Image (cartoon, rainbow, N blue to C red; front, side):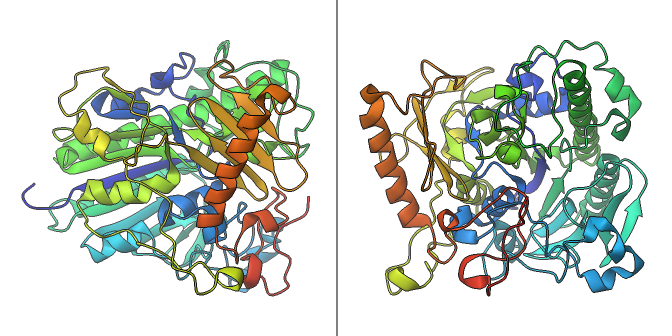
Length: 509
């Protein structure tokens, strides 16, 4: 590739914890192609979502904003489709919450907007789930998506050319086929491409008949030693699939089968890149929108698997694999703490796009009207690729400080539940009533002992509370602040805050 920006293949899974890969130490699961990406490049051990539920996390990846600055604070259950345009299927209970399309990121700059402006052909195959699925948005030239976001693995409602049809084939295969077709189209074009492949896997349903038999049978006699068989957490929500004993094993078979089937399809894409002679011209990125508890802490589900919402690492830590053969070192494990709000500036650096990140954004109205614009919170971590340029296989980057010399911390939010996490400590604040949590991660990495009521550690909690409060004050938009919203975990119906227009914003359980 001469004087051309790199192609970018961005693969996003749905509800996959960082623990659910063999290259991350889970010897029960079969993920040879995820492991292949890791072996060819970098595996980040400490990459965190901005919110432990799908739509807010996806919005943060695209915009670089936190949920309290983009306004997507729960998974979107309305505004994906125009109900009147659905024809006969609009009476299907599946679409009961749909009304008119809502572009939840309208007026916001995404990294795909920037890529498009810099000559990229942008394509989406798979899940969007950020409102108005019928029309391509934010720089995408090609658009093949899921109508509502979640779907069954067989008989998924897919959107193509502005219309919906039901797909009887396994949706993971269908998404891959579309991506492979576009790769063939991109071969030989002068412009670089950006291809988003957004799988619905391994999101539920985990019924064994929802996944190809060959992958389910791989786990028939699995001991599932990497996931605990614990009593159900007292805050587990009743509407989620959960269980112990044989029920647990059946659910895990479905979850693991979904991941392994997805992994096989990732292999198909990697093989096609090589066949077309495009692998060394293409940065490959694999990550997930949010983590997942599959029995961890007795919880089945992500952040909204419990009420109040949980912020355990199993729910907020996600995989991140990045490779670019011939350009980035291979077999590197990076321990630097990074967040999804860091992804936008990092991608700009990887693509060689200067000044692509929005320097600032308007903070809304009210008490902060007229203030100076605030910078977006993310910081590029692309320096790790240069810093390890001479490293060999298995090299570990233990860098833990940002450019200012301060210890790196990550922040997370889900409505009025907020988290601040350092390498050593995690503090969770539930505004305004609690209960709060404090974990000493260096001695309690499994987050089993809540120290919030221990007087010895009160200064730690107070210090982290102050730091967290100041950070959210700086980066949250008062017009969209999730701490002021009654997020339920059962879905979002419209834009919140000053944009709600007295409409009901969050679905009640």
